Length: 109
Image 1 (tube, rainbow, N blue to C red):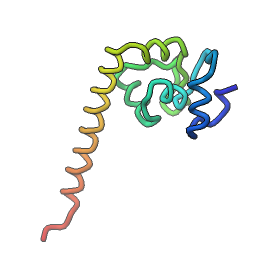
Image 2 (spheres, rainbow, N blue to C red; image 1 turned 135 degrees about the vertical axis):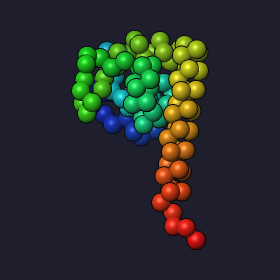
Image 3 (cartoon, rainbow, N blue to C red; image 1 turned 30 degrees about the vertical axis):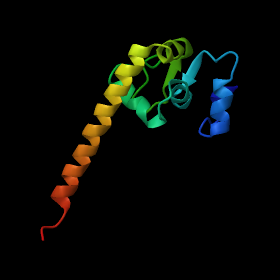
Image 4 (cartoon, rainbow, N blue to C red; image 1 turned 90 degrees about the vertical axis):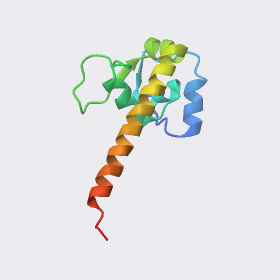
């Protein structure tokens, strides 16, 4: 079963993409592979309500997603565009906050 395997390697990601029938639920890594995003982007997509995990998992629980929802999102050009723009804004804001805190911490010459 694919959900048990570590999809972190390119070979395993290729196995998932070539799978004839996906399992009913996908973990965060498998979801990221199918959508073409990085695994660290998945929590940001959840926070923006662009991805909805199955059930109501607590914050630190592993998240699973319905394969039918992930596949339909991967084929929806508008959804992909919206997710890409949101992630771009998210990481831009996060990096600018990091730069601001770094400039406050640096000693004055």
